[in-house]
Structure formats: C-alpha cells, structure tokens
Length: 113
Length: 165
Image (tube, rainbow over the protein chains, first blue to last red):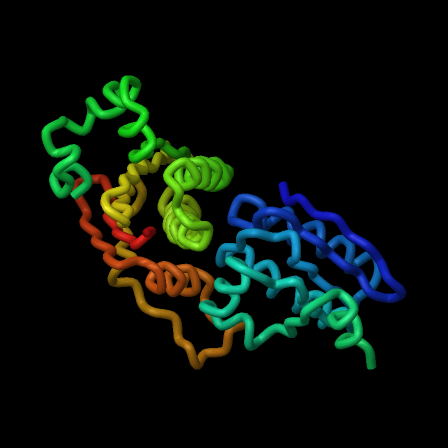
C-alpha cells in the first residue's frame, strides 16, 4: 500500500506520497487519488518532497491522475520533485510534460485562473 | 558471468556460496541472492533487500536508485507479462559486487521475452501515448552498461552489468 497523506487547501487537493511509488503500490496510489478527485477538489497538487523513489509504474499513475483531474475540469501540478525522483522524471521525459514547481504554494498558484 | 568472471569466487561452486557466507561477512555482504514469486508484492520485497544490500556495501544513494530502478522494471515486466494465469512463476535474482561494478543475473520461468531486442519507445509519439513498457525499457537502457539475454529451455536468462562505484 502507498504511504500517503493529503490536505485540502481552498479548492485544491494536495497529495503527499512518501517513500516509494513502485509497481507494487502504484495501483493503491491511483485508487486513492482517483477516489479523492471524484469526491472533492478537481485541482490537484502532488507534493513529492517526501518521495525517494519512483518507477515507470509510478510515472504512469501520475499521468493517469493528471488525466483524471483534467477530465473533471481541474488540473495537476507537481512540486518538491528532487534527487533520485527528479532524475527519473528528467530521463523519462516527464519533466517537460508535467508542470513542476518548487513548493506547494507555487504549484497551487499555477492551477489558478 | 557471475561465477566465472570473478577471481574472488571462481574457485567455488555457486551453490556453495551461501553456506560459506555464513562464516564470512565479507562474502555475505558482497553477494545477494533471492527468489521472487510471481505476485507483484515481490517487487517491494526485492527493493527492500536491494537497499539493505547496497547500504551495507556503501553504494552511493544515486547508484542504489539506478540499480533498484533497473531491476524493478525488469522484474515488474516479467511478473506482469511473463506468467500466464495459474502458472507457478518464479524469478531468481543474484547480484554480486566486483570492483565498482554490480553483476546481476535474473532467471525466470516465464514466457520468452528479450528486452535487449524489444523495440525502443518513440520519442516523438507524445508521452501520453507512449507505451509504458517502452518507458521502462528506456529507463533500463539509460543505466545499464551491459545487458545480455538468452533463452535456455523454459527459462529466460538476463545478465546485466552496472557501474555502482
């Protein structure tokens, strides 16, 4: 199971996964993120500051979360991508596709308007 | 490769190493062997074991991540696509450190699949359309120094080499 905390700030859902998103827990991340998007805010920030590892299965669920949020009329922004996780985002080409921001405040601001 | 290429281990039959390792921490810490089942939860167990193995051997965090990622992608692919329903799948992992390099053997009894010859993902195809299996292969190829495949009877044999110094 994914270790994840969440917070709602105004009309923005903030998801903060911890430790790893790999093939064994990617599905639980996706299920939890989808359920929260369906039930609440459609604007979503994923805060990666507590994440140490992501695999292609993890990248895939980040992408499906982005699609889900967008289809619901919201959007997705990322923040706190660092170290090993940033390297995987860069090498995979995801860094140039998804909105990446330094902190939660910047990520929230990018979803306004 | 795992046994023959290393002077340190060449004198010993591979099956005896684990037993001998009980008497020698140095050998125990430089070699990791485990058997993984065909449930996806095996990936998490493998990553835990690899992190412990890497930490014991002073491998830098970035190199640990790259080793984890490569083996995660390969094993995940085998578990997701290599075993048909009801098949008794298993994957044998052996990793050995030799002079700043890690040599890894992965042997599974799944359907034949050669990741060395599998098609590369299309960079121009747009990331949303890119096949995720292709993304995993792209990550693997970014990090391995060498990746060899052979099919031997009912088994896939993968040998890979990565710099970890």
